[in-house]
Length: 216
Image 1 (spheres, rainbow, N blue to C red):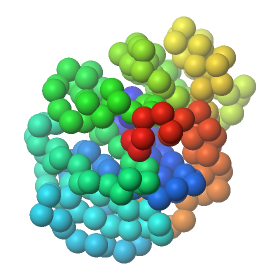
Image 2 (image 1 turned 90 degrees about the vertical axis):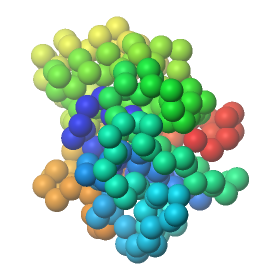
Image 3 (image 1 turned 180 degrees about the horizontal axis):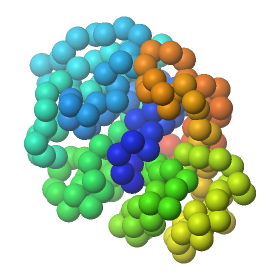
């Protein structure tokens, strides 16, 4: 779940699926016009009658919408997954809209083993994060912040961290995603993900008990 656009949530969703020690898929719930997975497949598997366009990247299955979507109601129902498959939802909609719009996406958020909130280490990024954590009150969350190591955040950024962000940090549920210059320029493509990014994804997965609520 991204706090706002261009924070790298889709890239991190792919990193989570890649780092998972199980079969995994990424289901991108955003419109085709804003897809971050369009160039990420190493093999295209074509369109499915359900409305999903499928691709693969090693052992990870990628599913994205093939049309422009006007609202959450237009997101196709998810395709059934194998029982052992971890599903990582990349929810490309504003969080308040998702939580207040009855849809299968909102239902999945309420049932997920954890919601991973992705933001960046800027003043606006941490403001968006605090608001997102307030909306997700009572939901298991892990915070992933794109930027420098926590102790190297600029002072204005550190001072912007609100009570919920600080609580996540103190509980060890805040993980830093290292900034990668190639990804910053080229975006997500079929090139292998950086090892540092996969390490951050593995650190986040340590906070998610996938046994409690099945594959999400």
